[in-house]
Image (cartoon, rainbow, N blue to C red; front, side, top):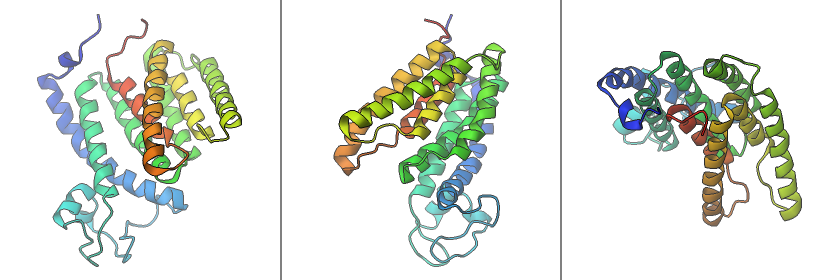
Length: 256
């Protein structure tokens, strides 16, 4: 019997949500720095965060963009220059994802893995949205989490290797065919790698649901994106990451 979504919102969930919320803010702050520095080839682990305008080193009160942005009126408290909304938005999204995940996932191991996915998936989505890139270093960091998720799902890390290989080949092939037929860029190699990792992480039926959902969201939003921005390439990592997160937290059946 499949547990309903309503059954997961219990009194016990409140403790998990309260525990996860601060980590949502902490990792959200980390994602804002990571997604700014990594595409610019700046060191992520060295040096304290600074105002991108005046270069002033940020203090503790500045390191939680969601709160400091509101308190400071959306401006750097040192130079007064307006701070981009990307910082509080990313941290707010991270907080939301952590809280919903904590409310939906009850098993401690699954919850730990599900929460660990969030900073990486969010970083991939943000970087693809802002820079049209899917960094290999972030995909590499996903690998141990994917192995852990597959292991706790069916106890065998060897399962899914063939599915991942076939998915990678098929996705790259479809992208090349699309480019050849339309002359436009479709899904990139980074997107294909991300989808192949999902093929390894999820059992076949859940992967089918993931692929259907991510594809539907990608096609729908892709049409809107081109009409609104005029840009040819849609950041598919956004909908791939969203579909991945939904498959992690929703009570989906392993088989139909």
